[in-house]
Image 1 (cartoon, rainbow, N blue to C red):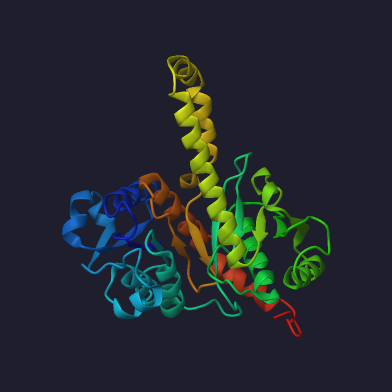
Image 2 (tube, rainbow, N blue to C red):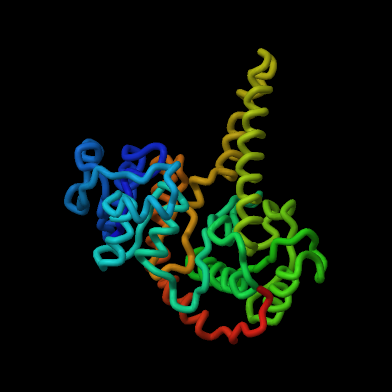
Length: 335
């Protein structure tokens, strides 16, 4: 497999990005990586040179750049050149930890949408208490969703969890304000009906408070709601660990207790650690494009590479397209 990597995207680029790539190269002997970025800055960290190719550019899309404007004006940026490697057939997939909006824009404009998919979805794996995690579609790519969009999200999520995560019949849940049928907006009511009539393993409406309990393997929602859920989970986890750290170091007695409980706290942190789940897949594009977490360390970026490799090897994009072609026409749907 040939993978294009934006080596300059993210908070810890290029060091952590390339360290994650090196770990992947050591793990997967059939992997060839195209590193896109400033050659002078990248070179000190590159060790596996026989399976590493460099595409040099000094232009970078920053985190505060306007996505559409940046992609159109910085066509020689590391991010745009990375996705172009996929479009040109030089790479099978792409990974970046850079500007999320810009990566989605570049994916759409350069790689293009999967045939039959109306709107792509930004879809991260999020942790659950049992450690299996769940896939959330969408977390911000499409704020104004239609019924057909959410039905397609469910199908893409079902294919991914079945092919990549190895779940035979993934449970599909619809994010809503209550678990009872008939709850929610006109949009969720229409989506509920169509998912219930589909061949997917639809488990009904699910509430945000139950997500971390593993109530479903795939949860679908519009991008506005999904982004709120994502940021709420991240914010709560950060605040909780901050409170625990403050309390456990507030006195000598607490420090002693913290020393005894350290292994248990470490296991809790690992269960809730985003770095174990890879990145957010941009589902609905013609090739695997993975958005790694902006603050990714080497292990987190390695996990994102692993996700891209599995999506490619399991033909997730092709399977999604075949499944979409079999869907009935969505005429008269809720706008």
